[in-house]
Image (spheres, rainbow, N blue to C red):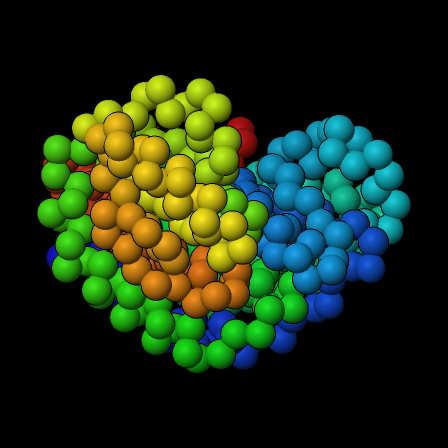
Length: 317
Ligand SMILES: O=P(O)(O)OC[C@H]1O[C@](O)(CO)[C@@H](O)[C@@H]1O
């Protein structure tokens, strides 16, 4: 087992720690959740969770919020900026915090590095301790920041979520290597809070296994992208509890065209139950998506400890 996989498997004690973090309350006006890469995809899920819990929120890539906030919010007065960054050093996310402070906005950083640029730049810092051996590919820290964001949104989570996620990951892994055989077209589908998770699953697979992968809202998938589906397709469906019945029709559609469907929370070729609440669903599914990236990488002979063209931190020159 390589270090990437070991870290994915050893993440759950860190979840238990993250459940006890003291978190600031969301802003009463607009909350702008920013990040880069994985951290932006987490922001998509967290912003949806904020809205679902009655806090107005949008997710914006760090670079975009730093450079053109007016393209995302006509009125940013009194906004609260919540910046996610494992390293605390991604230039665009740090810039987003620094620019927001110059504009007088409240700033909160969620990071896994206490001594970092973002921790120095933000007014309030939430520090989540992560696995010391986590490498370039972000796995444990993604789970921890997602958990912190969901808890900040107001979802109550307890130690049961760590046990649920670990059990699900172990059960799914019994089949992952088998079900990906001969599959080369990867699609992730999720609605609402699960859309961010779908985008993160697609990114994880891409950077770990050098495969082309895409993420869509399930009902969007039939409006064009479905034209690519054939016997090489592998579709991950993260069902949204409220709309599972219509999402199951999308699954039937892609199955009839040759796709294999790994499903969470509804029917598929291989399916697993998930907790009913949006936060529990996303957190329970995430480690399986991380391990799926590793299994596809192994199938293709890609080294996830040294993924091509990637560094742990991207700092603008
Ligand atoms: O959370 P951070 O440290 O700002 O990193 C964000 C992105 O940058 C990387 O760490 C490096 O590209 C990615 O793994 C991640 O998606």
